[in-house]
Image (cartoon, rainbow, N blue to C red; front, side):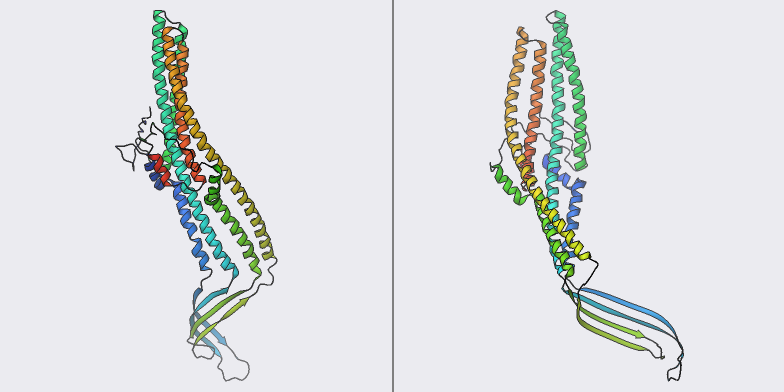
Amino acid sequence: MRASVAIFVAAAGFHQANAADLLEVYFAAQSGDPVFAGARAAQQAGQEKLPQGRALLMPVISLNANSTLNDQTTQYRGATLFPSGNHRYNSNGYGVTLVQPLFRQQNWLAYSEAELQVAQTEAQFKIAEHDLILRVAQAYFDVLVAQDAVQLADAQKTAITEQLEQAKLNFKVGTATITDTHEAQARFDLTSAQEIAAQNNLEIKRQTLRQLVNVMPQRLKPLGKELKLKAPQPADMETWVDVAQVNNPQLAIAKSAAELAAKEVTRNLGGHLPTLDLVANYSTNHANGGSFGVGSDSTNKSIGVQFNLPLFQGGAISSKWREAQANRNRSEDELENTRRSVATQTRQAYLGVLNGVAQVKALQQALISSQKVLEASKLGQQVGVRTNLDVLNAQQQLFSTRRDLYQAEYSYLLSQLRLKASAGSLAEQDIVEINQMLY
């Protein structure tokens, strides 16, 4: 019943002879999922914030050059030794200027803010890594659930077909009424409709998986028959919450945002502070003529410090400072909300694992009981104490229980991954461990 259904789609990137497992699909998604590719590009872009912030502390060197054609007419009034007339000549020159910030508080704060922005970028990428693992596992298991549903519908249809043929035969020999035949026929028609819906749902789940990896394997390895159930370790919900408060990447982003907002308050207040720069210039100019008809060459060198103190800018600095204060208060509130949300998510994930363990065990026992009910119903029908409808209901209960069990097993595994994601410890090794449960 756990054998996977063949998927008739070209599977470039997957081994054609064998079924693909969860780890292979995960590796394919790492290179084929556009969402994760975008997250990787965003990480690379975010890392550039640090050199951009560092550049504010480094010297700025600029080169300038000029070449000018001059056409000058001079007519002096009164007696003079200098000749009047028209002078046409070319002048050109170049210069180099260096400005090294000595004291710019806003630049230093911008550099420290860049470090926080890079930390946010890394936390965002970690969230993307966790999200990829969860999306791959969800899509993979959704396909398996859909395959199980198709197989169960087919097996149920086969069983009902046998029951329908038996009812028709019994009616012919007079040991059953036409009602038994109608009941079996109605159940057969219902199961046929359910089978069509299951096949359609399987195709939808396949396409969802295709969106992640851009190709489809011929087959997927299903979950093994013997699923080992494990409670969370450590077996204390608040310990998991404490770990999440330290390692959860969403909380790390909120903490960095709060620190950034606090630094913005100080940086905007620094708009009232003076700045001090070291300024050095070197320039040379050449002219092949001039007002007196002779050319000239000149070189200028200078070095000094430049002090600037803003006195009044229309109230813009004070306004930006008040804005930064309001944003700081908002970020602190958002940080507190994120703390509470992470704690709630972690508790829900922890309880989800515990509930999954209990639910799988209960359904395993229910499956055994449903099998016994079906066997007893068939035996009772043979001796005349059970009707055809009793057998059909027992078959329906058995297949529904088996379907619920499969779904509960996959949900249990996903709950484990979600708990580790909430605690900030989800990694490729967790995919490897689940992959070992497939066959």
